[in-house]
Image (cartoon, rainbow, N blue to C red; front, side, top):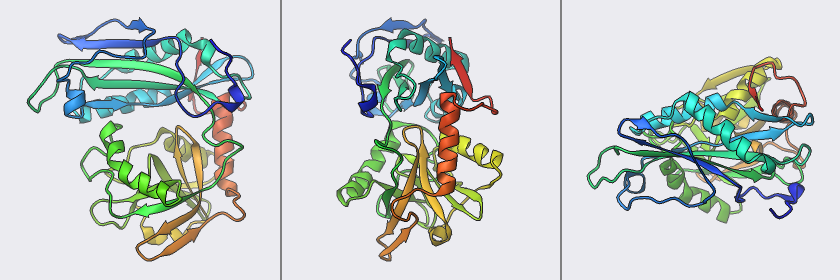
Length: 339
């Protein structure tokens, strides 16, 4: 392969050597097929194309300074994919099968794991979709599971940079009791109008409010929201939020570091009370928020002075990244070593 400039790697797609594929047919999953192709054959009437039977995951592996590859909380991703599959009536992939696939695809593409100190990581994308042909609206009788990897650079070049966000009131990402808690492509498609409008207005992303009353914060674009005040880490509780594994980890870390935590409805009216706010997810880990603009009443909420992230936000960020890369001990059992 061409030499990769690891320190200037974008957060995007680069072809690697192999991916894995398995098909559920006649009541059972096939053995994994190892493929070097970036393309798939799919039936023109597949339910994944027509009726949205599709779910995916995203997780990362990191090279430690000891030369060992560390995988972060794969079991939580496996559980979430099962939750998503059941939510839209697909055949789930078992935790054991998920683990086998993740470990195998990393091993097959070890040369693409970025070196320690580069700030880059190996992004792992499991994908599950209905591949059987149906014209009527009903679940497929056949499913395909694919897992591929690609090396990605850090989300923020040159360090963690606070971003500005726009509150969206005219687009709903997901309805209560809908698909909001499932990691399915339709939720991301539903968010694109608001995300593009925010970017065209000069904002990094949008903050979605609850679809029912427009009073409570749901998500920050494709990430979870959090706010910090009075040494307390606060994150929304909602029927339409995807449960971020990064957020789950930050809650545990905050408690470990002596902070209080609350998962509850977070009203927009509480925004002025927070000392620090941010978005969290696999891609960036944490995106500190500098300003939030609410067009409903033309208010701007500011959280960062001189574009410097908050102290507690950075404490959580550094601690989590240190555990992921093996620079600090893992007291939670989050890390799996890839042999």
